[in-house]
Length: 204
Image (cartoon, rainbow, N blue to C red):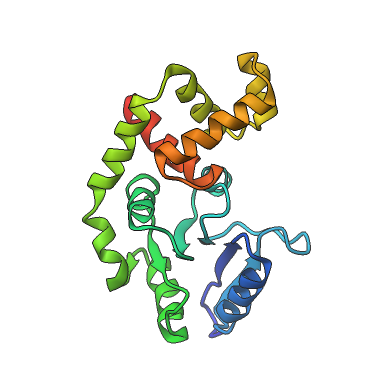
């Protein structure tokens, strides 16, 4: 690394360990970058950039690393899911797994410099905010009890904890959650939490 240049600290937070390690090695090919996988070997850094995928709780990561610029590694999200993340989490970059190594390194540097990196494949997601609004309308149509469940999930509560708060069995909560997933067209708690954050924030 040239003298006088500060290292770019990158934290890789993706659910797939093999993908995470691959990203670390690719990112570390640039001598100016110090890349660390979240939870690996007990290493901790205060990241400039946070590379993440949809398998982790983005709200919790953002709370823990509020200064980090967010770059989404798109592992197959639907357009409306990407649009929601763009609108509600102020992503600074979106990178496809099929991007060339040259473009990958360029994207990391561009975002670190304060610019935004979105490839042509994802630009159309910016034009689909109506899909996000439609999903917010779907949350609005949920019963008060279901809205409470969604809000508790967005706070990181497990089914058992939600059941205790609502005086319902864990099995009953699981059934409610499964139905809510289908209603809101999401497939995991992280996506539901992301959707809920935008909805409940806009209510205030």
